[in-house]
Length: 369
Length: 198
Image (cartoon, rainbow over all chains, first blue to last red; front, side, top):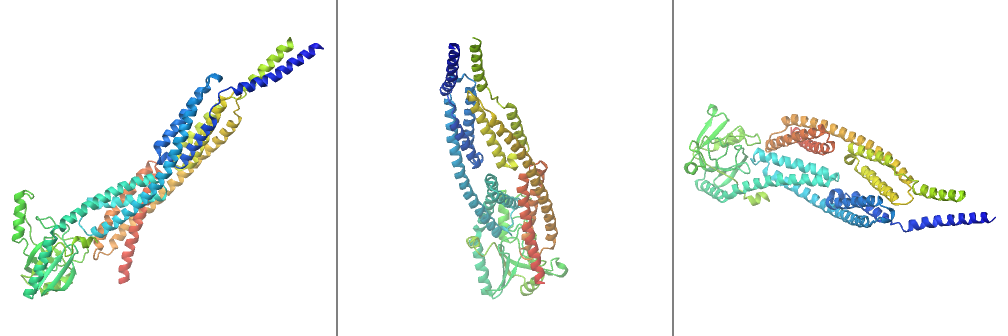
């Protein structure tokens, strides 16, 4: 009987003490920072959803690296004896990870919205720039390299717009940067070229005034060619009688310098000869007295300065002729009108009629605006 | 005496069983990681980024759960095993979705490439019919440069397609198509205007 009681007592003691020991064992075991790790993980995930891996890459990478460190130390501590584990480093890295992930997420949201605004503004301003380029330079003889750069700039802008619409803002930004470089550099080159060209505006104005004045005094015809607007004006006694579209040399910007440069000369000339029938292949033609004395002085000065080779020729045979109406600058340096217009001009002018060829009758400021 | 020994052994066995009833599901972890890697190889990050990120997040959470269990005296890997099974299925699904999406994008690039080549060809023919009146020829000259840029862009997109970079090729070829279509409209309008005048 006593034995039964003793066994029962031992059983109760064991039954009670085992769970107590287990509870005590668990209680005094160092606890890993599970909650903090979970928080860090969720914050990282949230940052990822806000595209921090793309728009706040540095902070996001740091946050991820801290999380990986926390996991590394957690696994390392788990390998140690239960009671000698220390999760302080795990906790430290988990907290750092959460902090950085939070910063990365917020930074990403802010960067993305700033980028969206910036991209929209850039797209609009580049489209305005393209309109400006089209307005100013469609008929301007830019080099094929510049035209190609402008065209590539337009294409890149279109690609940027597509990426922007898809929410691929970084890609859009890269395309816009490239497009901006191509368009701006081409525009700057072209406008500086144009500004440089228009430095002679006051000279052109004087030529124009003198030509009109002479026409008034002599009560006779005179012809003005405005290269920039591609116009041929016929004046009589100081009043404009006719206005035609004119076509020029393919490289019409600037004065003619040398034979074969496909430039239309600028200056005050006179009709030297009139050709028709089999004397010309351009329906009818009015040969100008190019090169005049002033052209010869300029040409010789260039040879002397070495800006032209000593073997260079000044050229000649600059005419106002027919076969025009092509809508493009195509001549070797002459001025082309339609045959019908040429008939009229040919009839009213004579050898000696003044022909003034100038860059523009309107200043650049007015053209740009 | 015999009973005492038995009871002692029972207690030790109980502790041993309780403390080691869970074994780290390494096989399942490896299988799921392999499935995620397969999804990555299928370019899930490019074609189904949100789904792929969700799978990665899920795996990160499971690994934290497994590590948490390893910290415990009495380990319980049952829930982690169940989550691993779900994530494995999800990773396989994401890989399949990536393949489907990639095929869709590839098809879209092919269609757009065919379309843009046809528009370029039509534009070349239209240019011959386009009016060359005042500024018309100058505009046509400009269009020729634009067409050369479009053709270069199409060639570049074709190169990207050949390399399997379908997403990059798509944006490029779409831009080329928009520009070519714009020129096509301009040319048709100009021709229609001239016909209208006659």
